[in-house]
Structure formats: structure tokens, C-alpha cells
Amino acid sequence: MNAEPTVNGAERVLLVLAALASHGKAMSVRDLLTVTGLAQSTLYRQIALLKRWGFVAENAGHYAPGPISLQLALGFDVNSLLVEASRNEMRQLADASQESIGLVVAVKHQVMCLEMVDSQHSLRCSFEKGRAVPLKAGASAKSLLAFMADKARAEALDSAFGHDPAGRIEIEDELERIRTQGYAVSDSEVDPGVWGVSAPIFHRSGRGVASSASITLMAPSTRATGREKQFIDGTLRTARAISEYMQAD
Image 1 (tube, helix red, strand yellow):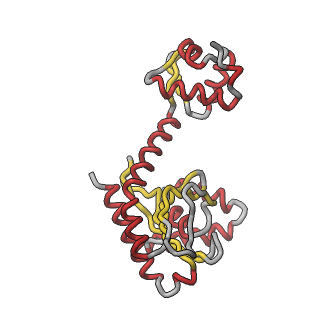
Image 2 (cartoon, one colour):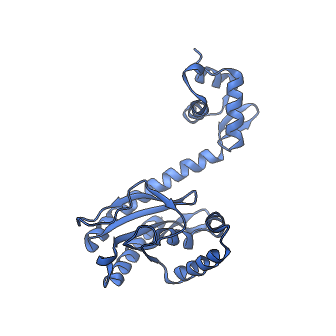
Image 3 (spheres, rainbow, N blue to C red):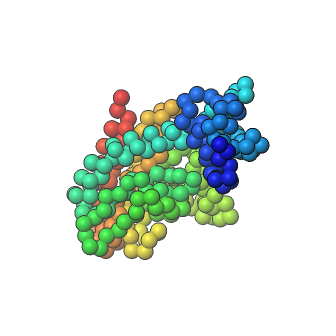
């Protein structure tokens, strides 16, 4: 049965990728034609696209998921482990501070929230799970930028400050200070009236210990006044506890 009439262009490439992902071993063109129901010319176009982007690799006329697919799988595994490792510590910090706590990561030059524990106050700050903002301003962004790999940070800053050399110099100086003190603080940089502190989570990677996530405490600026040290210390303790778990053998 030919499946081509029932799927659009975007779905065709996903159909090929899903077939390769679920098969468990490399597939020939004949195998893919049978599984996907696509016309041969259409199939070759989808394979060429996937190969160009690194989602598919070819060996002796057989096709299998490529290196980008592996990165996606590893990213899912790391993030799933990270969320599970962070929940209890995040809840403890939320209970102690009575403020909102977020687990954030850097994705494609954006800050994305993986997990959130909301404050019980009627007036609260919430960086919703799944929300993404530019990797440029605010405690979360600056914590992620300060402690990420040099190459990734340079690329992110190129994207954000490519036409603002003065701004680039200013933020690089600020990121150096953040690395020295171990955390980032901001007030009203992303959302008006919101104070935040963010500290990095470190985990083991193929090149040693790296950071790709941060814990962020968010509070209305009026409620944070006078409690900054308490909030900073609590956030640092939480980030360190999660880091110890992530680095344990």
C-alpha cells in the first residue's frame, strides 16, 4: 500500500526517520519502501535531506539513524535524569523560601524551563515549564552562559550581540564576575518586577565535569528585598546538592 497520498512533505521525512528509529538495525531502500509505502523518488529525497542534516547515516546502501539522532537520544536521557535528580531538592528550596524554583537549560540560544515548582503565594513569579526566552538577559540566561563550554558561549553571544560590540564586551565582563562568585542575580531584566538568582548544576560528561543547566529562584522584587543573601545561599546549596547527585558514580 502506498502511503504517500496520506502524508504531507513534513510528515514524509518524519515517516522515514520513525521507520529507521523503530527498526533496530540498518535498512535497505527496499526495506524502507515496504515500511513507509513511499514512492522510490520521494524516499530518496527524504533520505538525502536527512543525511544532509546528520539524522541518517549510510553504509553500503543501508541506512541507520545518524549522529544528530544520537545527540537527541542522549539529550533526552540526560534531561530525564536531571529532572528526576532535581525535583526533591527544588521542592525543599521552594518550601524554605516560599518562592518559585525553576530548572532551566540552554537550547538553541534560548533558555528553556524543564521543571517548575511554584510558590504558594497568590502573588508569585512563574517561568512556566516549556517556556523559552532568548539566552541573553536575566539570571537564568547569564548563569547558563557563564558556565557553558567556551565554544557554545561564543556562538550564543555572537547570535545575541553580533551587532552590538559594546554590549558584547559588557556581558563578557559580567559573565566573568558570575563565574568568580558562582551565581547570577538579576532584577527586572526579563519580566518587570521579578528578582532572580541562578546557580549552575554540574554533571559528568565525556570531557570531565560540565554545566548545561541551572537552578533559578524567582520572587517579586518587593519580596526579595532584604532576603537576597538567604535566597542566594539556598539556591547555591540546592544546585550543589543536585550536582553531587549528577556526578556520583
